[in-house]
Image (cartoon, rainbow, N blue to C red):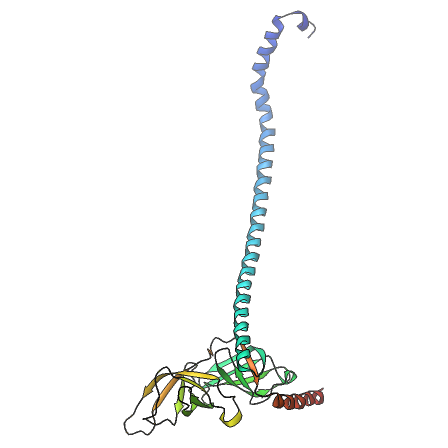
Length: 266
């Protein structure tokens, strides 16, 4: 070291020794470098795994939100259809949701989330955006039971919209079938005729769609034709319905009675 500044050939010797020692230094430092590389690689891998898991969770959350938006869009569409139909019928109406369904053979009933508090009453007509659905047969404080028009125990006065010919629509226990009774074989009935409520018996207002005639059979020797029609309301797909008060006076009377009943129950 003392002689290095004064001897030019010492630089060559130092360079030679440095080159000779470099492989030893590399081998000595290799474990440390490998350890650092492995540590960085492991940290990076763990970070990627955590990030990947986070992205998966975010994707699931976004997917769930997207599905919910689709459900809300469909629900809004159904509600708009209900409200549009309520503007056409001009009666007091209230939107209700189905909370239970009982669609056993020959027994067609549903439960809605409106009851005495909202002024529901037994015999109240229930409709969908497409037509008559049924009528209330039991009213509780917070819910009501609705008998569908397809129940085998239900009968509804109707008429052919084209010519005013009157009949009775009887449930069959099948959500897609209704029978028209007491129409003679020579009656003016055609496939595709719209059948609406006649307003007789003062239970259902007149002019509500009930169904479309799909099949007409004439049995020799029988006085009446066998006529089958499809309900206008899609009874197996309903989520929301309209409770109808045919006139405001009847509604106010029932509302007063129901409020009194609730007060007594309290």
